[in-house]
Length: 183
Image 1: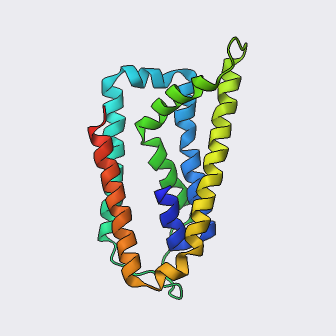
Image 2: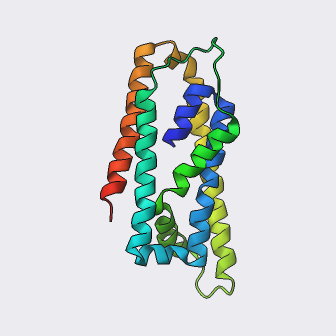
Image 3: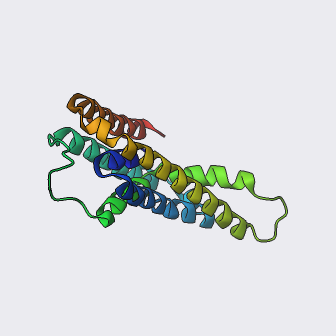
């Protein structure tokens, strides 16, 4: 969500849709792992969980550091090199792929909503994961649209932009710390 908001503020509504798409696409490996039981392996294998967790922590810290280091001001009239929508989506995908808690979430969350004594539980789990992904995509689009609407107001006030960047960097850093100390 934070990534989609940041992209909506920086690049506008269309770019935030690319971010939302990437973040939603990053859910697929966790949903797949949960459905086929690989997340149970992650849950029982401390080493596998720790490796993925460590990669996720490093990536969150990298994102926080990148935001802190970025001293550029957003100027709607300036022409500067911009990231492609593919690059924005790829970053969003990596955010979720490198989150080991997502597969554990699916492992704990999806089975609660399956119908007892259903013959095709895999199909039902795939359907539930698809509904979750569609809802996530729609919510992320709404967040990105809101951010893009507030874009000109925020960009016109450099101090607001500075505090927003600090808040995003701090949030990524805190999420990295929280992930680092999680079991």
